[in-house]
Length: 234
Image (cartoon, rainbow, N blue to C red; front, side, top):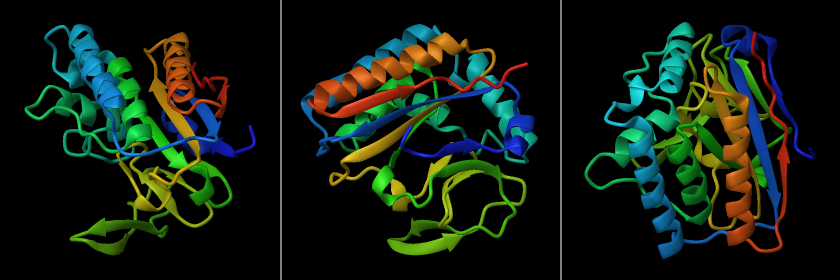
């Protein structure tokens, strides 16, 4: 991997069932959502409905495990849901899934279809690689509120992804900061799929392979590499 991605011992200890798979891509072509990316999101919502079979998203065993992890670092999972559960709720609500841009649509479709938190970051906007750590509470998280840029700080002990400049995603995979998000100018991205037991590692790897295929389809000629799962399971 040309991109540095590490998980701290403190984060591993908090959730021994944690696994992540990274898809690194260069030479991407992004742009506004298309009919094709919209169709992928609609299909993902249908796949999710089959998977849930009438259950609420939080009743899925994988989502229940994420709720336990959030509770373990002091978050309230019914108020700050992991990204996959939040998308799953939107998929079944009036209006359905949001259309953001082509690349975000692709990874959101994979997240919903497989019920796995998936994030995408612009490699060119990240400083010094990414680390999953438990925050001290002093780190900067730059976000936007009321149209204005504001600086927040995570709670002490909160699990965050960060780079050398500050926090890139709060509460593990709850809210991404705008600084590193995928824009229509993005040409290099790192896509991170995160899971907890009881989800089998091969299922996460299959989701990553599906995402890689979509990236190849929508960005012909892109250089894409799927990095092996990093299982941390007892």
